[in-house]
Amino acid sequence: MKRHIYPFPLYLIFLAAIAGFSCSEGSKNQGGTEGNLVCPEPVQLPFQLDSSTFQNPARAAQAKGYGRPLHVFFDFIGHEGEAQTLGGITNYGGTLSIHGLSEEYVSVWARDDNQHWTKLTRVKTDLEGKFSAEIPAGREFGAGARPVYAVVEGDQTCARGGIFVFPSGTGAIVTDIDGTLTVNDAEVYKQMDDPNYVAVAYGGAIEMLNLYAGKGYQIMYLTARPYHLRSLTRVWLDQMEAPFGYVETADSFVGGETARAYKRGFLERIMNDLGYQVAAAYGNASTDQEAYEDVAIPAARVFIIGPEAGIYGTVIQGDYAQHITSFVQNFPGPGE
Image (cartoon, rainbow, N blue to C red; front, side, top):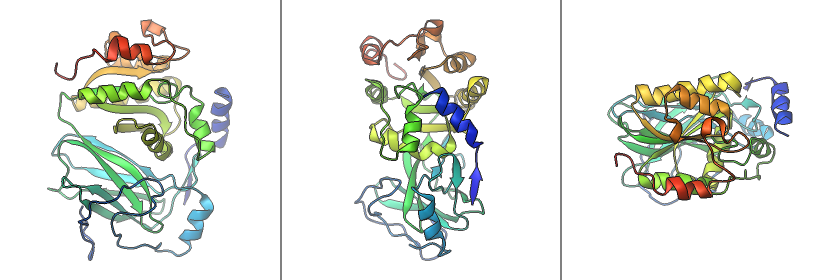
């Protein structure tokens, strides 16, 4: 099923402007600890699926015709004891639209505390290629950040996501991606056009985030990218060896006041509803700064890089090297 997310001309405007547990019979937890699952196309799965072919034989040719797998897998974030729902959309070749596969099986896997691969759930996609399931009550994950993987059983392609369960008071670092971690907004479009292209990061950007993570902060990536670019986003963060963290994506490309409102809404949720404490926030645009201001993040903890560096006194010049030395290295950890 193909579902357009936004009109094709909008892409041209932007481009020009920026030049376990399963209830199914026969399925078992896997005891092995070997192997890594590198998405979207792992060489070999470290566990056994319930099926290894598409339910509809025509899907194999259909998926191949659409192109590279870019499955959407949404992260869960919340408190311990809450119901943990996992969901996403099968997607092939679509960076401007979703090319999903209807009525095909997707299984969701993670490693348990003993590093054994465990199947969390197995579901069939709906007519739009979407899937959603709740981890059975009593089997939810406890506090921490847990990688999870959605696997399309028909061709063994996958997407990486996460379950993020933190108590109130958790310290967080929030950062935009495009033009903030990457050197400009155009890098994502190069990544969309060329599957082998690796978006260029600002010097020190990833080192900075790893320093914060090492101090005990949770990293949260708040991007205006639309949700169907989640796979590209996760792949890039892994390529850069960035800290594993929650990724928030928009319903479509957003900009201006829409971007400000979208980012403000996420920040209100994590700060007001979940009680997380944002220790520092990073962006590259006035809308980033304004969203941070809207939720009363202190101006001294808001940092803007790039052409708009200096707005409202929030400055990072050049790259992050000096900022690491002058601010991050001596910044206290959560609760210090």
